[in-house]
Length: 233
Image 1 (cartoon, rainbow, N blue to C red):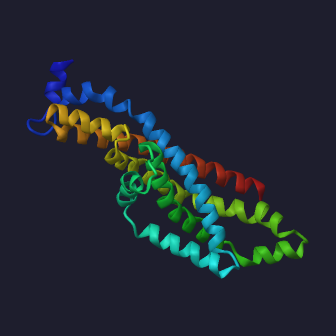
Image 2: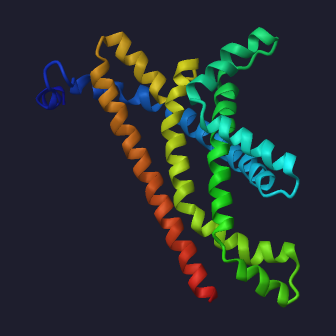
């Protein structure tokens, strides 16, 4: 096996035996990466929904508060937010563990983008559908539940797919605050063997493979939703 791996190596660029033998340790961080992605994505959807309602509210103060929050989060690097929560809060008397700090940063930042996706999806629905539903005697709640939201959800799937892809890759930043996900494990291997190039190439391929699986799931979901929409009509 080592002879085959040695033939795959490139001097001073890629050490195939090291990549192969370090694979189990790097992948041991995958469950943490997945857990952080799922927790953060659910939180982004919840907070993003609230921000969308705030943006579309008739109360001006709530509308501008939501818009200001979104503007701030979209203009703030996620790494800065991670450091503020993990390293900054202890100065105020609040100490947050690494995983909750990372999840909070990803939720607070990502919800701003999710809110914009939801808002644009809702505004993209033809106003005439509201009028038609009201003429049929449907309440605002029933119209939103049965007509508007299903269409908005379908149109938001591609954009939300990009959000979860960016989030999955972005969890690598959690290594900066000691969360033991895949990239953190890769850094440990690189440091122990003084060969960061090999493990960085390896982790890039791992992220690519995982993102390809997520993309396949997104495409399947899009086809499923589109088939259901066609069958209902």
